[in-house]
Length: 130
Image 1 (cartoon, rainbow, N blue to C red):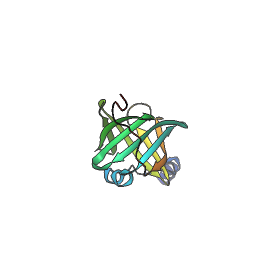
Image 2 (image 1 turned 90 degrees about the horizontal axis):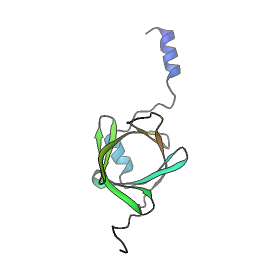
Image 3 (image 1 turned 90 degrees about the vertical axis):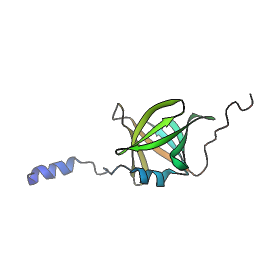
Image 4 (image 1 turned 120 degrees about the horizontal axis):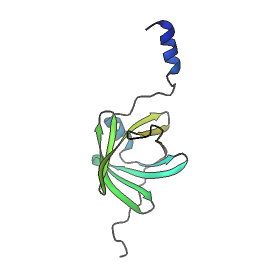
């Protein structure tokens, strides 16, 4: 590549470009955490990362789905008890900011991990009070 072309290519590369998290990094960073995700400033959902690559996901208070995650190439894929189709994401840490990009569809579909806690997700058992 010619020096000018190389310089222009480097200028076109975002300064914040970072390497996606590996499955090992993802597991080490998230296990035992509950993360709140937002999209365009609105709540998207909350996920608790349990040992053994298990998860609890909630989009409404007290309503949870259980599932698991697994690595696929540079992505992390999730399957849930009521939706066995995999949902694959690429995760990055850019400083203190957590980013997740959906691997299906619109490249603008990004989530931002805005809060991380050691507190478990509030998930009452099925048919509580029934």
